[in-house]
Amino acid sequence: MIITGISEAIGNTPLLALQTTSCELFIKLEYLNPCGSMKDRMAASMLEDLLANPRFSSDDTVIESSSGNTASALSMLCAERGLKFKAIVDHHAAADKIRTIRAFAAEALFVGSPPGILSTALRDEEAQKQASKPGHFWTEQHNNPMNAAGYEKLAQELLSDLGGKLDMFVAAIGTGGSLCGTARTLKSKLPHLVAVGVEPVGSIIFGGNPAPYLQSGTGTPEGAEVGLVIDYDVIDNGVKVGDAEAFAMCRVLARRYGLLVGGSAGGAIFAALQAGVSAKRRTRIAVLACDSGTKYLDTIYNDEWLESQRLDLVQIEGSIESMLTPRTAGVQSKPSFGVEHDIAIEPSAKYIQEAQHQLKDKGVPDNEIEEIREIAGGDMRCLRRMLERKRFGEPNAYLRGFIELLGRRFSIDRRTYIPDPYPITLIRHLVSYLPVDSTLLEVGTGCGWIATTLACERPDLVIHAADIDPAALAVARQNAHDHGASITFHESYFADDVEMSTPDFLLAVLPYGGDAPDYSWRELERFIASRNR
Image 1 (tube, rainbow, N blue to C red):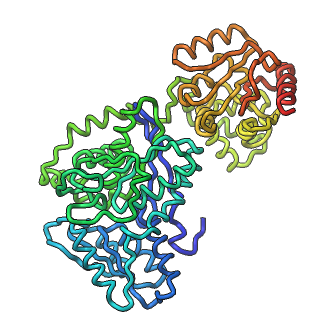
Image 2: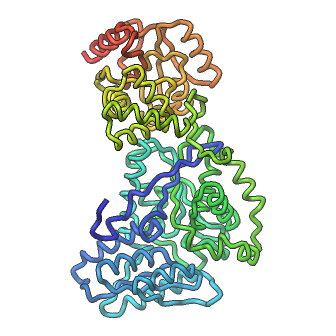
Image 3: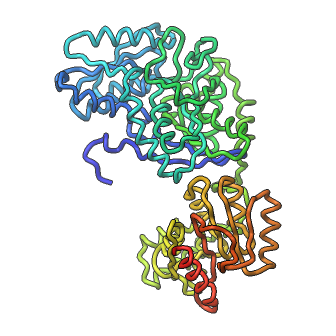
């Protein structure tokens, strides 16, 4: 991707699926924004709004009171536009954040006492004093509605990446922009979504006794005002997380997954894990990794510093480990959907190379081979089966045809082939694709693994499964019973004796090509024609 300015790189951050014992947890890696935090989004939004102010000129100075991340982001964006920026900071800010501000040729003006006490109120007082000078404009992040507006796109990214399927959104809360701005947009599409704000123990946003805390860039300390950006109407739950829990989460993430996140992100992810444990059913949760841990190598990730703060994390780290899915050494974990599938083990390099050669012999370009391999979830055995049985019609044919069968008006594509064993990718697409409370008919269910998985993962779905083989149906019924899955079974392919109204979605798992009977496909075509009338 070619860009013409660093601000164009803001957003579209990846979403990491983290394996836990209790929930589907997705971490939005906001620290991969160009200046290392989610604050890039709101800084761009506030600055664009300021630039639209007819009183502001290119010779004026932008002012902000910040613990570091907002100031860093504004420094970067002002440097891009050739504007002057002055950050009002205190000694609680991480040293690397101050270095970042100065690297962008911005000014860092300190207030408060050197020992490192959070001085939000003093910062704001100084910002107001500076803004009273001619040619100085304070973006005032705590009370600026463009702060929250900067996160609307983040919500849209979550909706797109998760297929509109999300039960809970968790984020650290300081100014409230990321939590409230994202939650407000999410709830416009998902009214039943639960929004959870996470602040440090000692912060006063959700009440409680005020006290000093070490987590940076989050919460509201004693003496500071809770800003107008915080909209309590969109927040369902407020949670407090201690410094020890937040920092322990950070260190576990680094050790287990190679994720280096800041303390506020650690607190939010810890709260999300606890919410998953407390939920009555398996819940899909998205949480923001606010900023990078590279700014806290001298503190959170420094054993001597932790000892100096009298923070013993060993027991807490062990508790966190128990909430995460055990991993086999040297093997990258893949999302689990509650039911074991006969998924091919990652084949050897020699086997993959052989399969790729077969694809090349069919005239498939290298870039399409890689795309197909990704779609198959790394399962080259499925691709080879497709080749051996001459069921390979064109690149991505089986997945694209699969999606085509999921529609209000059913369609059919004979190139479509869902290989057996089913790649986990197909299950994953179904789980995230189907809207809430949809009705699904799976035809040719066999032993019922797809239907059972969907019923376990998506209890909101109304699922019917049909197969002409009574022996297969008996196994399917037993599988569904063993896993507590609610499914209505029919001993039929598609004939009119499938007693149900037109389903919202149809999934056909049928033999195709070779010696497979055309009866199945004729029946499917007849069924679709009858339901489309």
